[in-house]
Image (cartoon, rainbow, N blue to C red):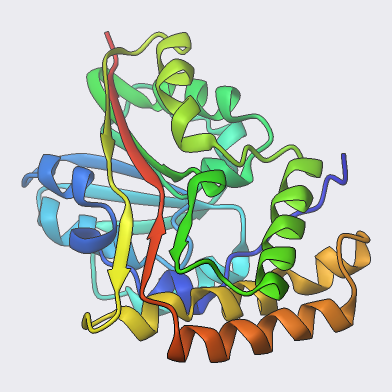
Length: 261
């Protein structure tokens, strides 16, 4: 195992919103709730949670990356019911404090997801709810198929993740992980991110992959999963292909919820 760390790209994190990018959670929120957001990043979704629970609610965003937390504190300082703290999903010390504990696209970067879910369960009040959203990277699809240069990068990306102990099929394993943590009424809902050419967010959402290449490329090269030349080749080929030939991108996601007994 490589045991590398990962910093999510703040450009990607900052584009996300509660209503569009964590819909299952948005449906559960109401004024006055106490919510813990694990892996909050730049706080874009967390700020949406704070607005939804209102002045009588309270929201805590947790992330292990101080750089992202500083961005979050600066960007969302206007919300008095919102605070950001440095912490790790596997070492949470909260006990029965929150009505809802959530993690969106976070457990995919954790080698011990069962431990993280256990800590999240402990942070929730009795009858509280966990809402976890994540990818199945192995099930992502593009139509038509991407050029072979990008497919080579994507294969290297999945192999690098696997070597670090990060589950490429996290979304599909969440229900059993939640049940094993003692949660009841576990439900899984499809929350795929789908964009098609001609749609209002097509260019922005499909630009994700050049940003991912830029963000993790050096680590892939250092670890021997691809070369600098292959990295640049994949970036160039994907960019031109996405602008001219890509018609549809489907990122496979599941939102899994469970209740604390």
